[in-house]
Image (cartoon, rainbow, N blue to C red; front, side, top):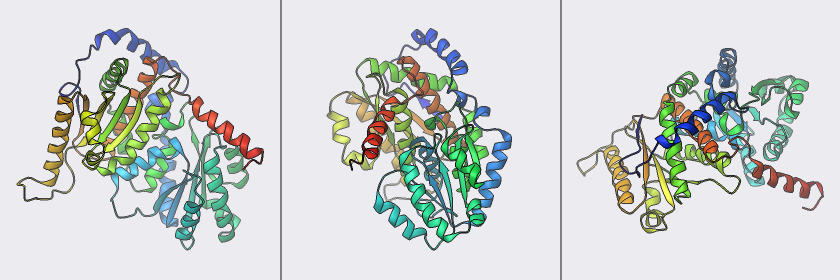
Length: 398
């Protein structure tokens, strides 16, 4: 892992943040909702073993594993699976993420796809009251109850929810479903390295031990520097951060990053708007604006230096070499045009490097929230739209 905060970036005075960072380090240890900061509080050895055993059972007993959840209940796991599995070969079992929208067409077509297959469900919701997953679960369970006996169904549903109190916990106890706990002091967007993310990732066949090892290896000083750079640029009027990638497998990782930073810092009329682009694809649509548009954007480039396959070209260089040249050339062109870039390079894409990045960005996002003097761990704006929507639904206005 290599971090370049100098070549294409403004000069940053890190020392002026020394006192702030000392206080923030204390907050990360003592505040509520920061158990993710200590990897050992994310997952115990007993839970980790249970996840592995459950994943093995799932792989042996179903063709399709439906993960029902939204936001932090699915983005982290999906981002890891998409990054580390084959573009075109489905995992065995096929892992499908459901409950991320209110599209009736999607649910209907999903059922048509799975109706003749052996299915298991993992419903993930800390509160147990999130509308989209609940509606998907209701629809799919209606189908499952017609297909499987009560005894068989109890083996095919896994509930991941709050350890002490939620509607789903009551349901799991009543129906004798297998269950996993979301740590009380960890919010959804910080829950990738808990049973929320680890079970689907393990079912897909990836090595969750290596994922956790990568997180433990994270250099916290690099995460602090990155948070300071973002804060400095924000104070100078750079209000949009582009997470820029050159490997399509990282697309969903940037989706998780957008939730992580938007929900952590976008409140009290503050915060950087996170967006994402896939280059070189998006150079042919957004490249003009980046090069010559309004100077409110900076980039964080995540580049995979070595891809698994080395394809030769008629240009005298491999396709991977050309991709790396493009990454550097674009950063240089943007810098010359007044767009600054942080560069994060991974030697290769694997469980350890993704685990490292997950923890790196979680820590940076939280530190950035403290630097903005906002609560990094709530999301009152999300709660507001839910409140209004449920009022309309309950008043029979639709």
